[in-house]
Length: 139
View 1 (cartoon, rainbow, N blue to C red):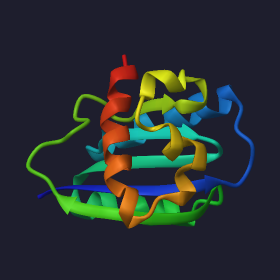
View 2 (cartoon, one colour):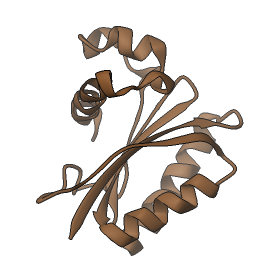
View 3 (tube, one colour):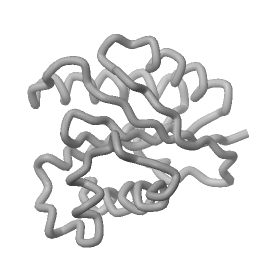
């Protein structure tokens, strides 16, 4: 059974561009072995991530993320059964919104100014739309 979950977290230390690339490369290797796909979005010291895969696999991965000392305030916002992967072509797509022209994300400016730590039930749909919009920046 395919599942998808979305969580946010706050970094516990500063990440250079090289650190983010190393994190991404390791995640892609691990996810390929596990059959996990998804997207990781970085913005203002926050991570917003969707994980997709078999239910037990993504929840075990999420438990590891919660225990990882690189993350703080890990909050699960949704998990749901899915028929088809949204990010199936990527072991882990990545977008660093700190390096994206905010004008190209019209409609998300106030949401992004607050940072991902401000996600609530009221603006969860905005987060979902943002993730879909981020796929425009993927190669």
